Image (tube, rainbow, N blue to C red; front, side, top):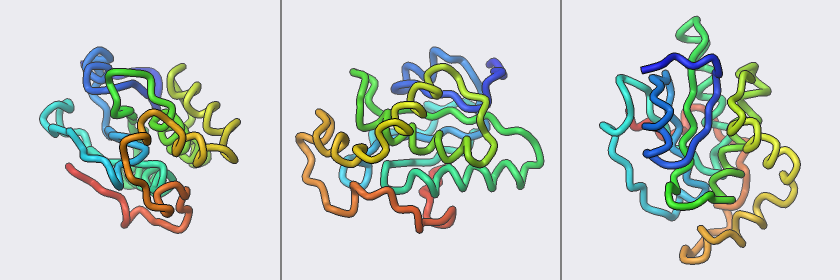
Length: 166
């Protein structure tokens, strides 16, 4: 397993995470609509003893805040791998949700991004005002019944609201 020179990396699906061959401190499984969609997730698919979080568009900022707090607790630089859940296609909804997490991480000082993370960050930054509409109109959302609150970037959630699987 490699220790990358990027602090924040982004990839698509478990196969992307395996191709990177890294041992991150934190893995964030991003499904923009995970409040409604099932999580086809096997924890043993992730390397070592990485913390594994689930993030969506709704709780993106709380997830990033959890990571920043974890880094403070560890008193060292942590490596973060953000995995967009759809491995079959490039997914606009997941990329925007990942971008929201990355934007908040950058605000917290975790800003050494891989090119893929930088692109997700730029997409969210430039499209923030339209992100909820784009997610709702995305291919991923077409077969899911969405609640109105799922398309809100909830900035009032805290680290305590984050789903930590491991």
